[in-house]
Length: 263
Image 1 (cartoon, one colour):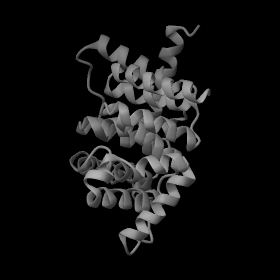
Image 2 (cartoon, one colour; image 1 turned 90 degrees about the vertical axis):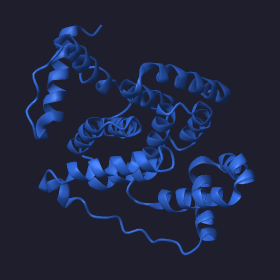
Image 3 (cartoon, rainbow, N blue to C red; image 1 turned 45 degrees about the vertical axis):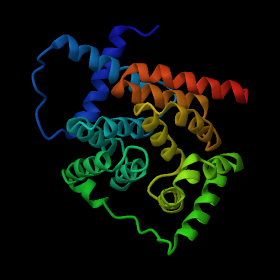
């Protein structure tokens, strides 16, 4: 059984590591009890549970804060991600991926904050080298590449589900544009790998409450190589920043997928 003292010691150690690059002094707590619960539960507890490493937890947390849209939250978690070893292009890749799940305003806002944080330190700026993608020349090429990527990462059934959505039926032109750029361009970028993208997608769908979509993507995440523990920890990590009831709802969806697959 973990003691409170152990949690406090772990919290202090992790906060010291994460906060080493804060450009401002920590404010005096207005409510000491709130700060104690927050620090012990967050830094000494949730962040250190087995199942996801610190980088993967940062992917989930930055996603949650992008959905939340609070400047300090995005700023602090981008700084945390860079501190644990994420690159500037990985950070930016999160917001490019989330363009399709959180929308334009949230991701433009997040990218602006992220760039300000990246510019704080020379070593972060030095790593801010743009990815040089080979952009495709037509939507047809994008759709073909996207189909191949979906089959490779998610399988034939997932690909068929996406190609037969209501969006493809009722707004086919827009749907093909979105799917073409999403899978044919963004998924081909080298900034994030398939599992990192899935962490962002799962966290975004949970935080926005899109439970029907979330259930489908839990299956896609399994096909992409995430295991049950990792998927559940994505929800727990992001839920600490969005609200725990979202975690409970997400786990209901995940459990149904796990049971249906007998995993």
